[in-house]
Length: 265
Image (cartoon, rainbow, N blue to C red; front, side):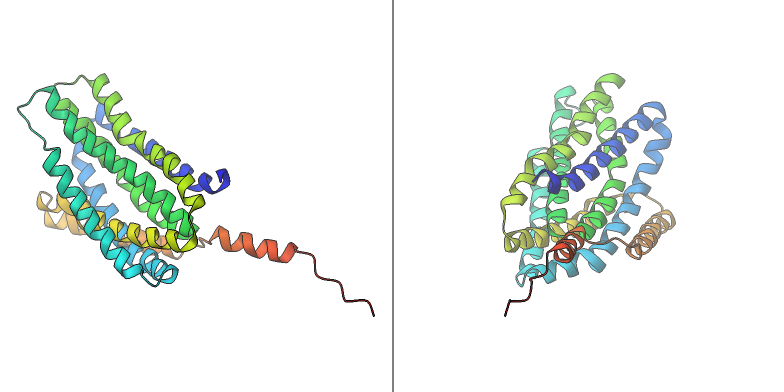
């Protein structure tokens, strides 16, 4: 069980590190990080759409015959979750410090779900886990910037904003991995395939919904260049020799197994 948790936890810790880098950047250079956080989010959207359609979704279809339905459910589930978070955790600019609590909780829930996605995708396929993790990690930088900016806008000091943003946007991702990975170990292949398809739908929603939201504020040319850069990086990544460790492990076991001796006559 602990061996199966290593890969998603490793990438979850990388995601937490990238978020922390974003927090440090916005604390030291708020103008620079705020200017480029939207561009990084759009690049992450281009990567996630490309890798989801070229690799993650086809692998989900191969895992389960019901994958299209679970994938649709994951997409709609992401839409409903985002609507629910915006409805029950609205951001109010004039509400003092307490107004920052609800959007920070929403960010924490989102980051926790990222950790769960790592566990599900790696449980189904190592290569799919790598593709999903690399795309999601890129959007962790702007997520840290957003969390810090919300807290600073509601009269938190630099130190307080860094601490609470770290707990909400950074620490929750590996926590999601740790809490969900044991369940992946005890699930059957059909259940993992269903969850994998649902996570693929959720990834598509994240890519086409929240991550593309900055297109409304960014100049069209900059948005197009950022998306194109993300697509290009994803295409390059898709040609890298990322093999499924599970297949290699099963092949090694098969090769190392002793051959039966011929029956004595």
